[in-house]
Image (cartoon, rainbow, N blue to C red; front, top):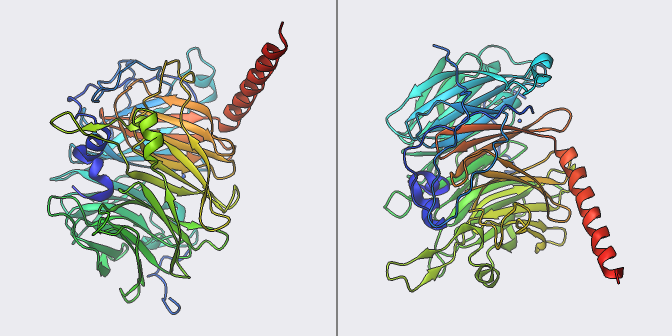
Length: 525
């Protein structure tokens, strides 16, 4: 398999020292209450319904090499069960602000995709003891001939004045059989099937109107479609196709926030800027030297910096490259992996790979997630997450990139002695208005970090320690609460609700109490 989803079917486990999970039973529900236009894009002048929730309370079977497993509490508001115990690799969510209903799409190793409708808990049910979980319905969208690897909704990009096909809310499902299914996000009805790529690694919607879709493939190409007409608008050719063993090609992609350009990262170590109208590659950023360093780029984000022209790509070499798109230059190389620090901590959270002879220890290096802080938080901040289990917050104010914090759970934070083995970081998401980062991990938990000082403020556990979170999407309610949806290796999908503001206040109170206690111990006779 390729690139960003090499974690599918085991590559991330290989880097993190984990073994594949057994075919597992589903996790249960913990009933605790609780993301313009419509035409073709830009000019490049300058450039049958079934219940999907399980009310049981069972624990999921976990995966993992030498990681010690403990059963964690299930803090999820809801567990969605549809994939017959097979790993869920992809998840996308959309929160309707007018109704509070949540739509979730999931895809997995059972070659199927599902659409789940989650209705918020009523006030009567929420007041019950114990409170009732939200109601949900699920519908199978498709049964493909290979893994469903990527999902995306276009709802947030649709022009509210658009009509007909241009105003249709869609879910796109990319599959390893080379097809992309388009489905009505309200009914689950199939709208179209697009083909052309080999294995589909990612799907991403155009931000102006949500009618143009970008998809990347392990064959080194990226394809752009006009979804109302199911027409292929462009094929971007330039990335090398990979290592010949199923790993390579285009690993991640997106459009720039203004919609004028497409951006792709590849396992050839390059980040490429494309003119959608002509298909011309406007610039190639060579972030990893294939002759001296090797390895590819695994993840990508755009829209950083005061002018929104920064992009960041994480690599298998343990670094993240930051580029300025308009200036066409590399502005920073962020050294996420610190070999000396990782060795001192016993390899970090991601575990270690040992060769067959048992002599050489290879520390995990790859950067698996990157994200820019929104301008409302700090336009100069970026975050990286790696298979070493560390989240790092960087300040790009002065160009070169200064490390602000390395976020690692303190040994006492989760009731464990010694180093907390979280496994690798699999996804990152910034809060839209608070200096808060949400990170999903290979140990099955989502951790909430205060980006101002690197403090751990909350841990969302799903009762399935050791089962990797393969994907995470986060939607934010008007009151700032985070609705976190995770795709888990044990075949479950967990829905959490986190009041981030309350968690921040609670963590601050705990820090003040700890400081007071420390001061009292100093003056005690």
